[in-house]
Image (cartoon, rainbow, N blue to C red):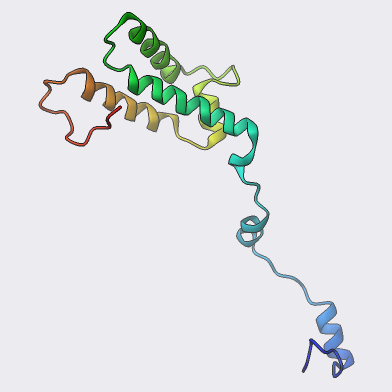
Length: 130
């Protein structure tokens, strides 16, 4: 049967061709029609806020000056706050980006412990460097 040419399609074959059901699994549909979440400007901004907070935390963890101490303390307070009232709270940003906030909190806590006590023998050999 030649469906491209349509010259030799009989009545029952044409009916089957025209009225067949299109079966599409949900995961196949969403693979094509899913919006790219990080192409939305609001989410890109939230990702940038999170990246900047991580940079401020890592860069100022040793608190060598009063300025570094202030930046670090403010950033740490932001990370460990359970407040979800504002748009740009850590909890809301993580929720909208699909990130587990406690996972990040555990990671930055380990980073702080590893970099605040340079003489600590338990310091991981492969700790993240700022």
